[in-house]
Length: 457
Ligand code: NAP
Image (cartoon, rainbow, N blue to C red; front, side):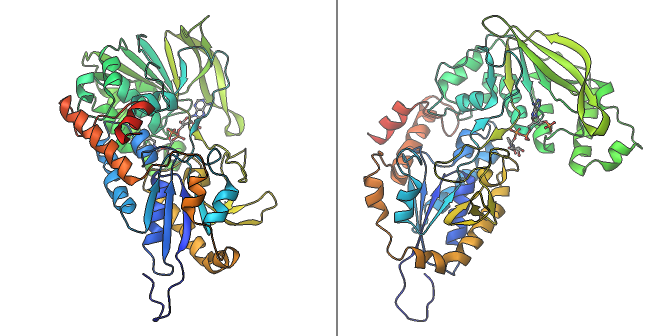
């Protein structure tokens, strides 16, 4: 409660946060950790389950990162914060609806779609976005249960970021190694029957330009079920050369790890991961499904531009996963920059096409800054947005002196609104399933029907 010297407290500043991933919940956290304004925060999500990419993005075997959910949970349990599930922005509620019920809206909807390669054959069956594969193995309710069969012996994963590493690990590990994770049982069964033997991880630039972070890269080297193969000539960077001199520390660490792997002889493990740098796909091949991937060597040409060497090769892959970054999706009635796939802003305040502030609208997380950074990056990002919002609080209160009750707006939305207690029912059902199957702490419920059954509607 704000100390206002004994005067009667004004009504709390009402804030809707759209999206309950880390960016949204850190926004709610920052709103409750200040003493300038009394607040009432609704964290709205289209799913009945909170935590966004912590639940449906972080790889299931990254248990420590998944543990972030425990601290996010504390925010949702604050009496000033409410989880409002089952409400989709643009479908159930519009920007105008929210403007009637809240002083401010913070959009924290992330970056939910994949980027595309723009090469022939990209839409053939068997050529998919990593986001689809991740959604499937994380048990996202929108992912079709029977989406993947993993009947190809060779798979190509395109991109040199952490998502590519996640995808490669899930493909390379044995089902036994993944048993104690929260992977839905049907996914574990498909992974147990997987015919995948060889995974090509393709990076269009060199090891110093890869976007891997060192802890995630090291995880790959510790695979018990797969040999990781790096060609020595690809990590043979002149130790006294310009390239290394100008490389960031993280890049030099990556290079050191990769160079060490290049010296290791393969140990004859059941699967093999080939890391190939300076390689880009030029066409996905096949008549009615993927039967190969044509790739071309690359180098840095004039002006620092990446160019093809003209040396081509066909990889015998039956599946191609593009993991080349995520992009934001426009929100109805909210300005959007198609080039960056983000909402334009200044210090988190949404800007219109003319560069003027749109009063009451704010952004946080990937929809604000693009799909970069780790979970913790969202904490300072959200705090910056909340500082701007609190600076604006007097003007926000003046602009909307008597907001409509949020519950009235939500009731009129046509949504089946769920709450935190409903999420706890899902949580309990997942824990119960894990114990019944004698697997770890949780086994995800895989679809909408199962989620609805757990909350009894
Ligand atoms: P990312 O880090 O942006 O990596 C995307 C990769 O795709 C880059 O190597 C990029 O190469 C490549 N790429 C882009 N366009 C391409 C094209 N047309 N052809 C071939 N390659 C192309 O994206 P991400 O892996 O999706 O990760 C998103 C964010 O989530 C990152 O900040 C990441 O660190 C974070 N994340 C963290 C964790 C973790 O901490 N454990 C796990 C998953 C994700 P160029 O550099 O040449 O453009």
